[in-house]
Amino acid sequence: MLLPPTMTDTLDRTDRKILACLQMDGRMANLKLAEAVALSPTAVLARVARLTREGYILGYEARLNPLKLGIGMLVFVEVLLDRTTPNVFEAFNAAVQVRDEILECHMVAGGFDYLLKTRMADMNAYRNFAGTVLWQLPGVRETRTYAVMEEVKHSTRLPL
Image (cartoon, rainbow, N blue to C red; front, side, top):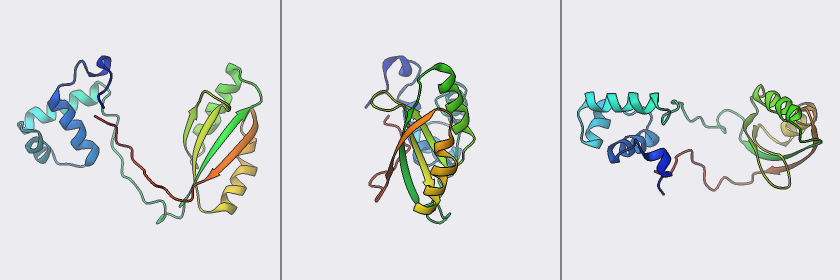
């Protein structure tokens, strides 16, 4: 799958190879990256700097094991707001930003307003979170919870 033409106008084949390599290993040494894309280390460094400056590379982070950290339960939550007005959206958006348990929050079209991705230690922790945090978020009228039984596929890699 290719990116839409408007996003790829400044990307050539080498840029795409660099992005693919860095998605696989964000800690790849510049020399190894240069070998992988058949360019000099200086040229690769300049390209990575440009890709970062232009916003193609947003940053780097370590992927942590949630099981080892005691937050192995993945829970998705549908949130329906009581009103869909700009001030309710703004208040809700601001409130979820400060909750570390909420890994992702997406405003969606359809039968509810937001889809949340959360991590918890177990169902008791989720129950506590729902009562003390989730149902107290601004504008929340109704929620539906989906506890994940098995993560079949997990990836942050974008198709290039």
